[in-house]
Each structure stands twice: as structure tokens, then as C-alpha cells.
Length: 184
Image 1 (cartoon, rainbow, N blue to C red):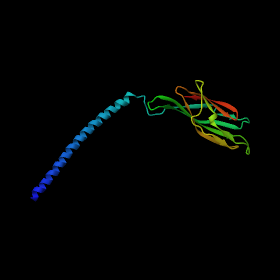
Image 2 (tube, helix red, strand yellow):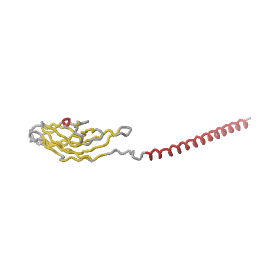
Image 3 (cartoon, helix red, strand yellow):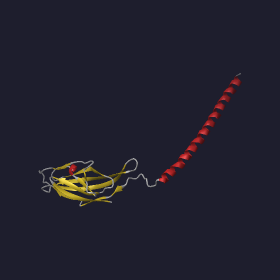
Image 4 (tube, one colour):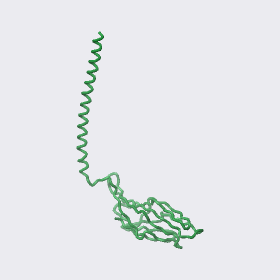
């Protein structure tokens, strides 16, 4: 009786092993067929739109002149630095404009013991090639002690689609200056 029971258990386990192997083999075949189909479809999708890349379009921006002296007593030297421009797109790839970012280095030319220079970029205006003026999307003010220099970073303008910057108009203490911009 023992021999019959042992052989029945062995037969049942062998039958179970062979039945699992058959299902696994079928699963592998269907998976490989699916993988082949997916990999064959992907190159067609990539080659159908070669103009779509994952690179952000960047522009070179130059300022001429790159600095200006402002203030009723010519106490603020303002230098525009690190100009950068990138193309903005919506999720569908449609052009939504350009983001122009820059830093401002402010030097207070007053003698020690003199007044601070407080520069508020919210008063600056960006003149576009179509004649309109835009205000900042983001800006950081700077308060500079006498005979010292500070930098205001992460100042940004958002330009509408199809426009380019022409000039950055700076204002301080009821005086103004214009910095010409060239976007390439």
C-alpha cells in the first residue's frame, strides 16, 4: 500500500510540474510576441516626428551697454549680468513664449556713512520688438550699504509668443536708463 501511495504522490507532483511548465512556456511566447510588437511600433513613432526633441531651445542674449549709473546723485551703478532666455512650450508642444532671466549687480557709490541704495526691479520694464512693455514675472529687490555691492538674482520676464526683447528700461530714484538687448 505504501508503494502505491508513494507512486501516486510522485505521479501527481510530476503531472503538476509538467502542467506548470507548459503554461509558463505559453506565457513566455505571448510576452515575447507582445514585446516584439511594441519594439517594432516604437521606432515608427520616433521616426514620424524627428523635429520633436527633448532639448529645451535656448537663446543667447547680449546687453549693450551692460551697466548704467542711476540716481539723482549718480549713486547707483547697476550692471545686468547672466542673461539667459529659454523657449517655453505647453504639454502639446505649442510655443507659449520666452522666459528671459537675469541678475543685477548693484554698487552703492555713496561714501561710508551715506545712504543705502534700495533697488526694486518691479519698476523695470522690458520693451519688446512690437513696442509693448512687460513687467516682471519674478524679481528680487536689493538693499545695498554705502561703498558695497550686492546681487539681485532670479529676475524673470515672460515674453508672449512671437516677440523678442528690445531693451530693458531701468529706474531708480526718479532717474532712468535703457539697456539694449539682442536675442540670438
